[in-house]
Image (cartoon, rainbow, N blue to C red):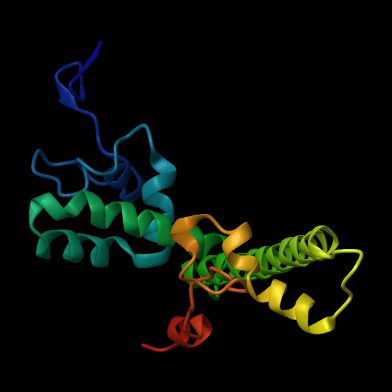
Length: 175
């Protein structure tokens, strides 16, 4: 019967000690973070960082930060296994490209909405007796107050609510 990591009175080795083929000591720094039932977790971390480096990193950190550090190492190691050149940066870059594409699509959709509102406003505000261009321009200038809720009246009618991002690629590649 397995109880608290024990099998027939002996300690069950953690995934790290099992992979390294060594005896798992009661104070093993790997045991709390690399359980025996998750051998792939340590295998990928070992492949990328090496057991000695992981051991040093964990021992230099306060215990309350070790779980987060192991989680980060596992994430980076898995990313490096999938993409040995870029790792996490490749995933981040890909996600940033998706964000940029979606922001462009949103801007286009918002521009289409503005055009549709302007067409709708133009067709409902024109009177059959007056076709003056000056009157149409003046009525278009009043359009924001007619189509925008009162809490948005201070913004421009043609405002596109997008976050102005600095060049993300530059910040990803600089250290």
